Amino acid sequence: MPDQNEMNGKLAFALVLALQVSVCLCEVPEPDKELVEKYEAMKSVFYKRLMNAYSKVQAAVGPMTESLGQGQGQAAKDYIEELQGNPKFLSAVKIGSGLAQEAAPLVDKARMAGLGLYGHYVRPHVGTYLDEAITSIKVYLDKVLPAED
Image (cartoon, rainbow, N blue to C red):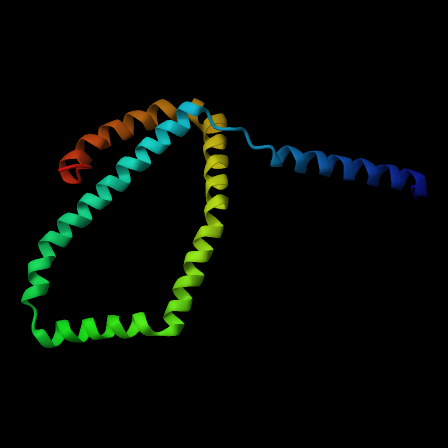
């Protein structure tokens, strides 16, 4: 049976090893500036595509909603107005917007950590293939869902 000093030594060694592993896991590499700029550009184009699609859908659906019967349209307007005056709904909106504001820095930090991990571990292996795939997909997206009219 091992003596007390040997057990304490093994426990100390295991503790130091566990701390070293946890410190190594916490050190996330910083993403390259070029990768961040490329990501931000793609995100911007993606949002432009979504906004353009939304405006097209809104333009197509607008005349149809106006032609709906007054009863249905008026009932929907009344319900929305009632919701906007409801204190529970207003407090839920305030809580949701507050949570979104509080979570924004965490989301940015997680995004940068993800980009750093991708740039350090994944990009050297699949970066060129992914870039080629995105470039080929952009051709079809420009036809189906353009960023600008």
